[in-house]
Image (cartoon, rainbow, N blue to C red; front, side, top):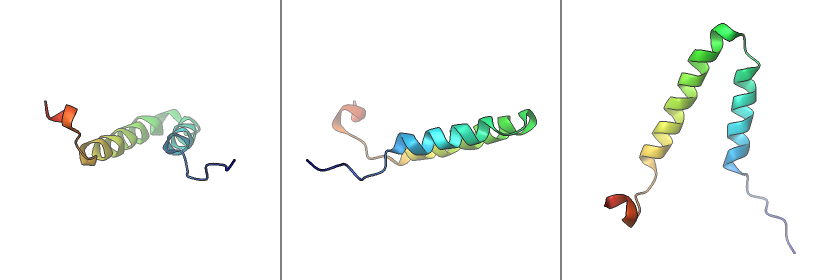
Length: 54
């Protein structure tokens, strides 16, 4: 039995969220906006599937 060595994308998200939560309150809104923009960009660039095409 082999261990999966590929990184879990969710690990990176949790790391970013913990980093944001550790920032002063004044900085969090901008950090969350940057995270949102990054996730939206990734979603838009993801390959479309047959079910996405309607």
